[in-house]
Length: 64
Image (cartoon, rainbow, N blue to C red; front, side, top):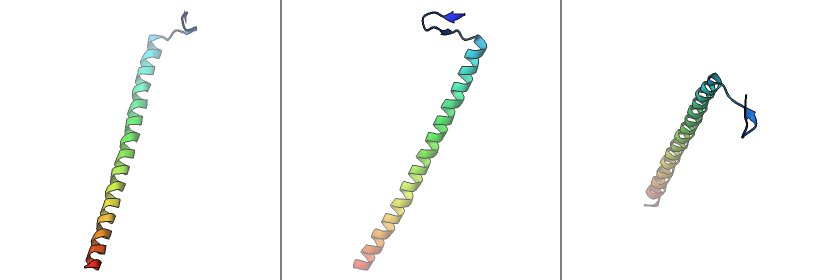
């Protein structure tokens, strides 16, 4: 059985269900990777901010 408009084999109900499940897994993986990247970015930003504030405080104490 072929889908005549797109000239490709029609999927069975089992194939559609499998595609749905695997699609959810891919989406969850992408979201998880994005969350990890965001967490790493924010942690690095906070670390750099703390270093900058410490450096500025040291310069200010040295200057006065």
